[in-house]
Image (tube, rainbow, N blue to C red; front, side):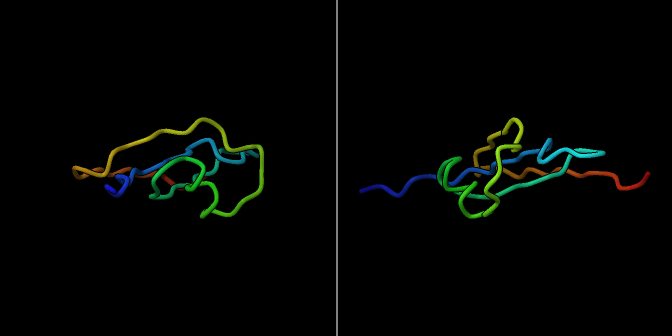
Length: 64
C-alpha cells in the first residue's frame, strides 16, 4: 500500500480577533492537520493546501 503524500495546510485567517491569526501543519489531509494543531474551534477560516514537492515560503509582518 502506497503511503499518502504529505501537504502543507495553511490557515491565514485563523481565529480572528483584532487581526487574523496563523495556523499551519504538514499532514496527509486537512482533518489530520486540524487534529495535530489541536485547537477545537470553529473559527479556522479558509484553508490553503500546498503539495510538499517543491520549496515554498511565507512570511507575516508583525507590528501595530
